[in-house]
Amino acid sequence: MMKFYCAWFALSTVLISMPLTGCSVQKANDIERRDILVEDAEIAPEPMIGRPLSMQRAGDYLLILDNKTDSLAHLVDVACGRYAGNFVAKGVGPGEFGNVVMFSTIPGRDDAFTLLRADNRDLYVAEVEGTDSLYLTYTRILNLDTWNVGSLADGGYIGTDGYVEYPEIFTMFDREGHVTGHYGDRMPEDRAAKAGNVAMTAAYQFGFAVSPDGRKVVAIASGDEAAAFFRLEADTLRAVNQFRNSSMKHRFADGQYLGVDGHEEVRFLEGTADNERVYILYDGRQLDDSNWTGNMLWVYDWDGNKVGEYALSRRVRAMTAPDEFGRIYAISQDGTDPILVSFSVR
Image 1: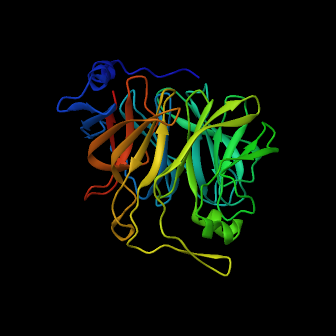
Image 2: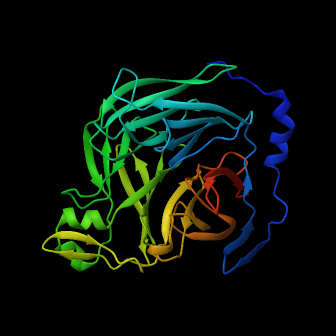
């Protein structure tokens, strides 16, 4: 695919990639503490985002999953600062999607994403095409029995689920979609384990982030302060480190998961990663007050050691992986409709 180059944007790209002014850095006990300025992204026309669920970046392209617009995805070219339009049409006809549960990136590809359909769990590759005008083409590749999916360096896939019969966090698939194993300890409390795997996995759910090279994976607890770090070795995942420093007070009865009280503190929300570090978004508010955004980044190396705490000037969600300059794109909703923002972690 021929890449459309925006000469007029080259200077501003260089400027945006420079360190932000107004950032303060201090180190204490080997933990780097930094204040980071979050700014509106320079995109024209501005995307009209409804209810963003996630966002991924491949090369110069952002793909935003939005289930409150006529189409399910917004495509943005950040190199040119342009909004390419809505794609992934809703519907039941040819080329339409009933729903999409998530997008993910593909190691080694800077012009393509994977799309997992929620209605039948078919996995598609969506490729960015065009020069002056961009568009997406979709190719179904296989069916995966998982709710969240990521691509690995060996061509296989990794997925996470809740409400399942097995206790582990991850399911690994080969490139044909066959299950090759389950990995990862959810670290539940004893009373949760006694409720049975279906109820326990409903309570202790995890998201994850895959390193850009597809060789490292981190599992991030949904709401709790817990994470587990893994490396891809041959066709298995090797556990490197894990921790759980908090657990919401989950309620169970007769083998059923009944949820948590709204006064529970929400801690980890989501994460992203480059090949050297993992960035986990932290909330810190009660569940009743949380809109699932955070203004703290807790930073870890891939051995699971905490190396930084970054305070963001605005609350964000749906973060992309850092680019080569350390720039992360995200969605902010601080008293506004959802807008695209960015910040630098270097």
